[in-house]
Length: 573
Image (tube, rainbow, N blue to C red; front, side, top):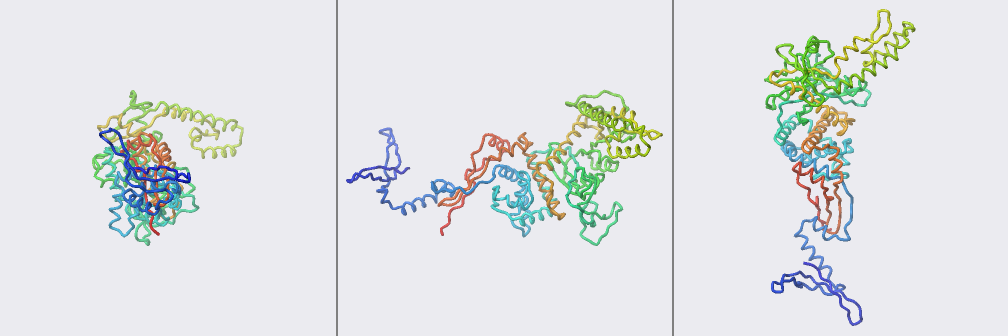
């Protein structure tokens, strides 16, 4: 159906245009299409435009508002602006696949909180993955710079209220999200990796100590002073100074722990006061995971968790462990492992293993990385050369001056390792230490309690602990865990949960597509949504999809977004 225009000249020689509503019909006899006039509108300059507008309006009510706006606005269509859409859409669809929206909505149903709380939390998670900023800046980002389905705008107060609620329901949300992730990805949680990191705050003083339980959670009774006896309450501030893994011992910090599967999927996260040591943390983590009805687990941890108490605790419930041992500790077990003879077995590129039997309970595996050995040797050679230059000619110095230099070198662990002082106070290279270190180049020692796990799997399992380190790196560099702009402990903890949810979505996308999040994010930055307004209303239309975008959506089993993202019909004044 179309509008046909014909032109004729009147008696005065002026060209007059006539309008007709027509459509083509197939003539089976003539075997050709013939035009049929349905309605004559008459002369164009005498047409009843109000009647035509009413007709068009009646027809448009049969169409989708956005489609009607696109078809009828014509030259009167006005471009309002554009917003990011591709990355948000990708994350939102995965969020819904994991049913995180359903999980939160069901929990919210038993409260008086706004049902938009779930949308606000998703928007904050998307902000961390796409354009990490403070919550105040994120509230401006939502709706203005990014289109969030179901959330046209958001205030900073709404963000803070949503975070307060998320902190309250953390345990329930984490458990239900894990169940959905395990179902969606068919996860085999047989190896569970755990490690900790710290994040600092650029403030002068830490938080005032308050009474906390052994898990670092504030006690409800503020008058409880607590006793640091290892069993009762303790007095600790949340943001406080401790051993910083960011080399910022001068600033208050908090400690964060994360459990990750062998595929790099983060399944749970914890936060503790900044002066919490690694020694007892893995026991609390094991207790927290006990109620998740997981099958037999082999816990994989770094050297900070290798105490005898931790090992006994991890063995409970028919679970096992793979834990790194300190080769340089000088322990009897480390010395015995290094003294055993035997041939190394190639298990992977740049990885050789040798199992040694020391006792009846634990198994020990020495791992050797040839490339790592070359790096260790090069570093040691550079340090020894630097140390030789520092102590050259010091025999002629006074004892006081040599002592001063000795004190300076003692503050540099790399150099101090290879320095010895003679009985007469002279500074020398410790040749015995250099020789001992040469024997350790590229090696690390593992302890395992599982009697059936092959030495190759023990080595490869521990090597995958790098997935946790990669998670920390992405948490700090991609998701921007720091700086943390919050002051209240509850919101700091909620901020960590938001970062975990963002990392969870990112890692699932990377695992499924085989591409890095940076590349995927850059590709979907091209997919924007534009806002137009016209006589029939306002609508938002996405840009055309590229082939890489379609391929990524297909791998993630995510449908392509609708052409008209949102439409609002005009209202009569």
